[in-house]
Length: 127
Image 1 (cartoon, rainbow, N blue to C red):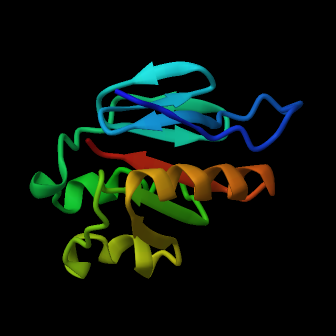
Image 2: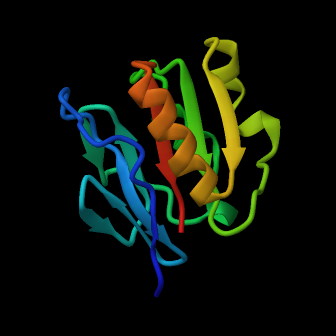
């Protein structure tokens, strides 16, 4: 599959985890390829998020992010932008956590920009 380069910064002195490429079946974070759902924070990449795909999302998948306390959660929903029912992520909005849904390429680009600004952002990527 063809990848698109997302090189936004020449230097990354804080060693922040950034998306470096994406394709229809994968994303690359700091040069490492991922083909399953992942959660990307500034200092780590997590593969313990139990969400397998968009159609099986439930409240527990969103509750995972409460303890991480991001300012913004970006959910990459694959090749198309999709929106889950607001009841699924109500606990996040009640906790004043911004939740944005976008296709995966847009989530990758937006995460990189916000992370570079030092924002407490998390990207959750579904395949």
